[in-house]
Length: 203
Image (cartoon, rainbow, N blue to C red):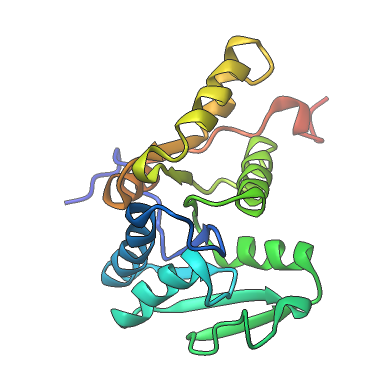
């Protein structure tokens, strides 16, 4: 039974950032499929980059195999037969990468980074920066599959220790080793108030 004291985020759609490569770790590869299956079984729509390749393809496969909703957002220049997933619930084409990220943001109520490379990190840190600036209040999670992100998380801790990242901003990063644990943290996430210096109406 829900009470008014319990804060719960409504996660109807989650954007997943991850690699378009398969990588060399079978644990990470299998976990990507499990993420998709979990989202589908819990009636959470997948919003992702629209590729059939790598971890991205595995997440989508997990969703579709379990009768879930998979929405792909892909820029026109990547929309080739070798890349694009043609069996999705919905495929949205954008003019460029920036519009792709805006559309994924608009369609989502939460964000999760699975293992990936430069593109995944770029998407993760941009959405974290938007949250830090108060441009959205959605939960952001890192799925630390097989401890993939240990070194990155240690680097973030160093940023805090050196005084270049506020602890309150570091707290925007929700981390778990399982999708079940991560979704629970995301549901209970309480957004920070908009920074005072961002309040244009304040005198």
